Length: 112
Image (cartoon, rainbow, N blue to C red):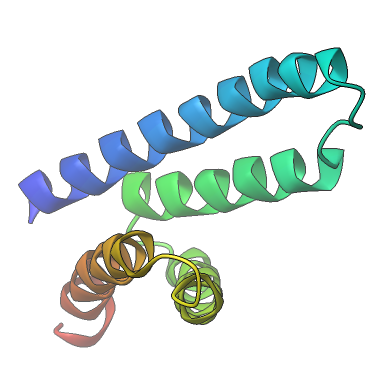
């Protein structure tokens, strides 16, 4: 289970960092073509989501934090349904990631 915690924590951190960097670099690229930047709300949501998930992986003994992480993962699953209209691969990766986190959630909270 420690390996699963490490895997989820590392993947979440790398994807969140990459999304923030891509948003800032992409904003400059979009401005060069005369388009507006992406919303700062998207960056805030990505950072907040990553913070909750990483915190729930670092401190799995805190039940309320794990439950908040479960709500965040349910939100990810709902978002994957909407993303599946555009690209099935990305939606499948998101659902697989959420399934890994829910396995950790089940083994940490409900299997005691």
